[in-house]
Every structure is written in structure tokens, then in C-alpha cells.
Image (tube, rainbow, N blue to C red):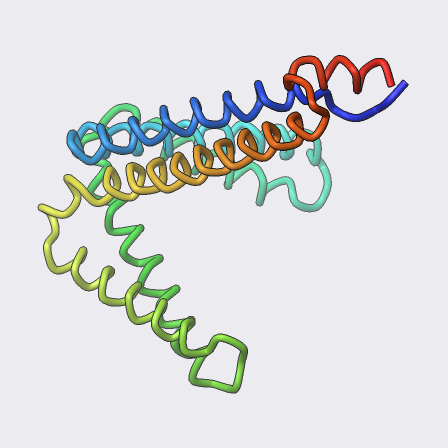
Length: 201
């Protein structure tokens, strides 16, 4: 029996990739239209991540009880859970702190990238420096427009991420679907028959 994936199943997977990509694109567009809702949503998603991380850290602390690393895991877990509770309780107020955190990360990351590009000859130093400068400018812009920027920064980042991921997924699915169609034509059969012939090979 052949172990190759039947063409029929592969084509279904490529179609599913296109559909999922289209859904992500739609979600990204809606997020850009209703950016404040997307901002609150991103804060809540971040709270869930903190909650899961806190539970995992506390579980690790329980496993380490009486040994080295117990207090580090316990304190980390407690802080993550506390931050998650605060965001769940006051999501609208928490977006200001989260926006400032994003700006700080952009600023620090941008400075490090520029410093790394200037420090010595590295491959792609120019692009690294440009990336760092853009990050620094974004951080300064966000910080300079607080608290207004807190209403749209997180939602915009989430929406753009969904949009880019959706486009990539849809394009890859479409390319795969077209390629599988050409493979099916090489068999001189319909793709579903080619898949059956692969199963019986």
C-alpha cells in the first residue's frame, strides 16, 4: 500500500486553508473597523495567556515544593494570576498599562537592534538598523499620544496580525490547490480518482 497522502484529501486541506485564511482576513478587517473592540479583545486574550501561565507556574511550584526554584515559580505564578484578574476586572483601564508595555518593548527592542547593527559588521545590518529605527519611532509616537493611543494600538496590532496571517494562509492554500490540480492532471484523471489510485497503489 502506498503511504502518499491522497490527492483528494490534500485538495480538501488546501481548500480549508483558503477558507481559514479568508476568515482571518475578515476578522482583521473588522478589527481595523472596530478597533476599540479589538483592543479590548486583545487585552482579554492577553489576560487568558497570563492566567494559563500563572496556573502553569503554580503547578511547577507545587512540584518543586521543598526544593530550589519553589519561590521563584510561586511568585511568578501569583503575579501572573494577579495581573490576569486585574485585566479581567478592569479591561478598559488595563489597556493603558498594556499599551505602555508595548511601547517600552518597541523602544528597547529598537535600541538593541540599532546598537547591534552599529556595533559590528553583521549580515543585514542596514535592515536591522531600519527595523530598529521604525520600532523607536512607533514607541515614541505611542508614548507621545497617550492616553488616546491606548484606545487603538493593541487592536490595530492584533488586527494587522490577523490580516497578514490570513492573507498568507489563503495564498498558500490557493497555490497548493492549483499545484495539486496540476498533479491530478498528470495522472490523466480527476483529482479524486488520482487519490483513489494512490490509495490502491
